[in-house]
Image (cartoon, rainbow, N blue to C red; front, side, top):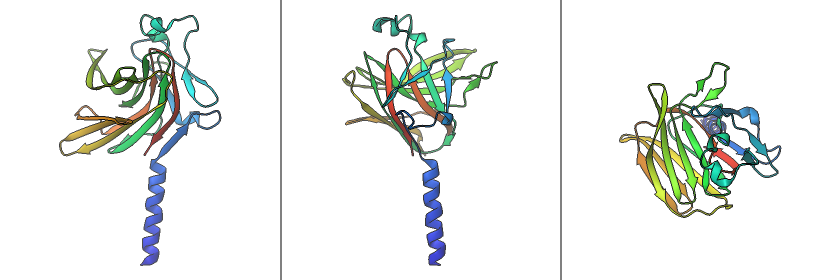
Length: 220
């Protein structure tokens, strides 16, 4: 009986380990093959990451001003990727991130992405949990008549500093009241219930409207 109990404990621990993902974005510290680069439907631009010593950062045009990156040239800096692994039901995940100017690094919870004619991955229905200098926004993106729409599902008002690392934590729980999302950054925490949160989903990162750095990404 003791052997059976020990075997069960070991198998349970193995399942927990397999369910967890950790990427530390230093040079040589993560596996790019775990991820799929993913574009926005709104722009033809396919973003890319630049590997630095301790982080990855979205590639931006060198001739663009900070104001332009948040305006007419925002589509030139959008960079996103999703883990290849699909998740379902309850999960907690986080990323350590920072921004240069005002915005806008974030986390993604996405339904299965769309494949373009050339096989590239494109976001469709998904949530973006976005950090910026005046708080956190949770945007829900969806499609109507073949066009992308988006709405703010929840928000937190707070002051966040540029060039400062923040760990953004998200917890998904599927309760009897409905799918629940809780977002926490330091002492700031808020949550909401939303039936648009899919039971099966992909998780990832997004950088837009400025220079955004990511230091790690963890799922458990």
